[in-house]
Length: 359
Ligand SMILES: Nc1ncnc2c1ncn2[C@@H]1O[C@H](COP(=O)(O)OP(=O)(O)OP(=O)(O)O)[C@@H](O)[C@H]1O
Ligand SMILES: [Mg+2]
Image 1 (tube, protein in one colour):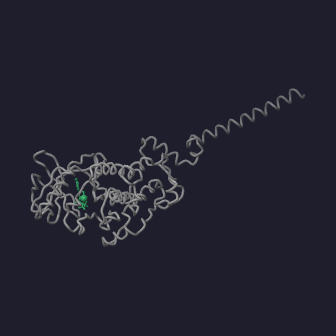
Image 2 (cartoon, protein in one colour):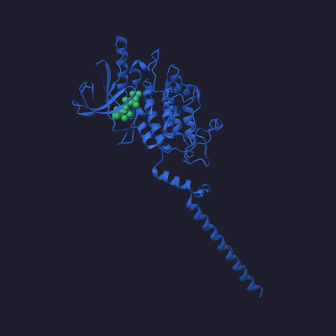
Image 3 (cartoon, helix red, strand yellow):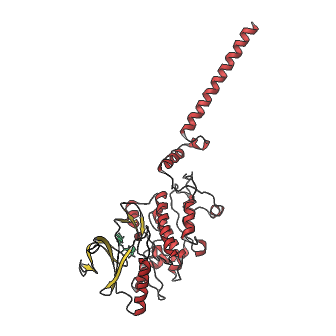
C-alpha cells in the first residue's frame, strides 16, 4: 500500500477492498471496540480548507451518523488525515449490487423488487430526516452475504468529494450513469432525484446494464435529458413492474413518484398474479395501459409454498378454467365418465322396460 498509512485515526488498515471514483475503501480493525470496520479515504485534497466548508462537512457527517436503519450502512466515525477526508463505517461482508449484476447477470423480477423495497425504505427514512443521498447507484448498494439484506452506503459522499465532481454552483454531481436529468443539468435536486437514480439501478438489475451508456460523461448526461429509455427484451417481466420503472425514470420530476413512500406503495400494490404476458411485450408498456392502470401483475411477497403453487398453475393452461391446474383436468374427466355411465344405465333401463312390458 504505497503512500497509505497503516493506521487512519485509531483504525488499523488490513486490506484494500475497493476503489471508486471518490476514494479507496479498506477493511480495517477498530482495536478499541474490537470490531471490523470499513474505512473510506476520499481521494484528492479535502475541501473544508476554510471554516465554512469545515462546518458544512461536519454538519453533513453528523446528519449521516444519525441515520440508523437496517438498510443503511452506519457511519461510525469521520475525520481528516493529511488534508483528506476519511470515514469509518459498518463493514458489510458481501458484494455490491453492481458486482453481482455484472458477474451473475440480470436479476429476477422478484429479487429486483425485494431490493427495491429495501432501498425505498432506506430512502424514505433518510428523506424523512431531510437528507438526500445524491449518489444512489448499484456500487453503493451492498448485499450482506449472511442475511441477503441490501444496505445503502455512501450517504452524502457526493457533497464531501473534491471539486471535480461539483458544479460551479457547488451542486453535487453524482455518477453520470445514475444521474437524474435535473442533476445532469446542474439544477437543484430533491427527493425525486434519488428516486430516478434508484429507477436506473432497478433498470440495471433487470437489463444487466444501466439504460444510458457512452464513453463521455457528457454524452450520458445528454441521453438522460433527451433520450427514451431503451426497452428490455424480457417478455416474462410483469408489466406492472415495468410501469413502475417507467414512472420512476420520467424525465420530468413532476411525472415521477412524489416520494419514496408512494413508490413503495406502488410496489406493494402490484397484483396478486405473477403471470407472464403471453407475447413478447416491450419493457415499458404503452402509455394508455399505464393510464388505465391495466396489467397489474404479481411481484412476490407471498410464502414460497403459495408461489410454487401459483407457478404450477401458470404452467397449466387448464388453470384458467377455474379448477386450479392439473387437478381441474382430472376432475373434468371424472365428470365425463360419470355422464357416460348415467347414459349407459338409462339406455339399459329403457331397453329392459321395453322388453318386459311390450313383450
Ligand atoms: N461499508 C462497506 N463494507 C464493505 N465493503 C464496502 C463498504 N463500502 C464500500 N465497500 C466496497 O468497496 C467498493 C468501492 O466502494 P467505493 O464507494 O469506493 O466505490 P464506488 O461506489 O464504485 O464509487 P464512489 O467512489 O463514487 O462511491 C464497493 O463496491 C464495495 O465492494
Ligand atoms: Mg461508493
